[in-house]
Image (cartoon, rainbow, N blue to C red; front, side, top):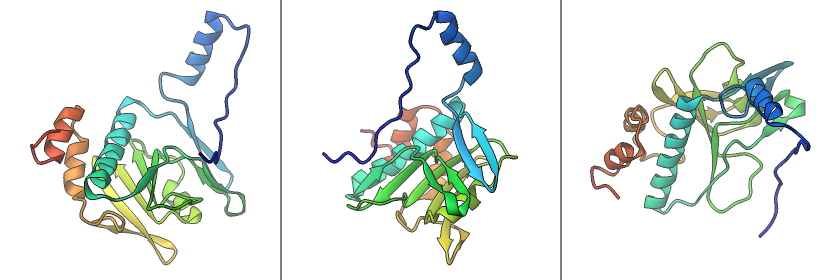
Length: 190
């Protein structure tokens, strides 16, 4: 197995339980922060539980669809993407590479947005050359395709054109995986 990259781990030794709780308070009750950079601005966002649920369920549906249709894919999670010369970098909520290939960028990035007011993440994706971004925003899944250097909203994915985006939007509102699987598979269950 080829080692492409390694995790970065920091261990603090000789700490007390109070030190642990202090670090948890500093981080907040959310997942570790994801960082984004655009033209001198840094955004730090710590996903909440609903954010993580939407991302995970969307990623599951992409994976299940690909497995059911024999489409090769690699899930890459929140892979750090950056380009110093373009002054842009971020960690997507999830990303996928389609086919048997090694790539420096995902083909598809999934972005869950609960709040407005941060930096323009779609601009970061554009500068990084991400060919497709699925953005869940305002309870709707939006498909953005990079066409001649800018994003255009589309009604379907270029990579998974048969996937029903409106159905995915409705399923992402469901809370329980069992309900999603039953409806996604047409009531057949698994």
